[in-house]
Image 1: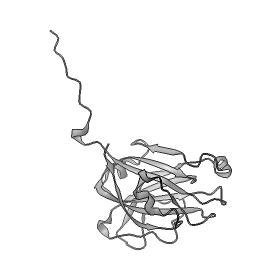
Image 2: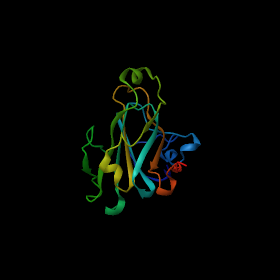
Image 3: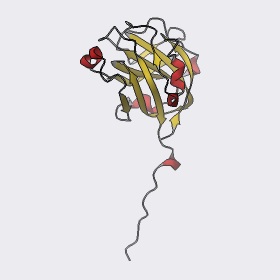
Image 4: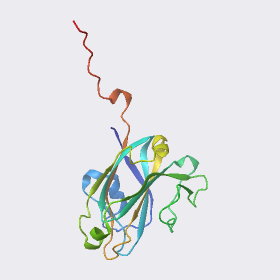
Length: 189
């Protein structure tokens, strides 16, 4: 599966200067993105993808968030920004961003747990990695072509630690020529 690179942070609701959202653009560097302060209940970031392709799977490295939701959109209708007030949790299947009425987002990955309430309160397993394949993604959204990704994180169980992501990787479906070769059929002889 070819990886779709992340090329730019379009907007972010909150970011620690020591752990900026731009770290998500370089997943191999070991940096992470965290909110600016403890006590935030929800964070979001809009990322630009390197190419408009259907999305096959997501690899998400957590950094203390309890839930993640991923939405997709296109910049064709205009460049969109994250509103300072995120939509109510969970977000609607389709909703329009205030900065660009033509820019609609669709849910690609419905809200998924990254940590349980007890793990969140104890700070246990904050860096878990989750792999979301085609069965986890909303089929209609996964089959479209998108160049924007909005990642919404939530941590309603622990207000004493900042949270964010260690990384996010986006993968396209394998190309026809990348598919595994079929085994040759031998004729009985």
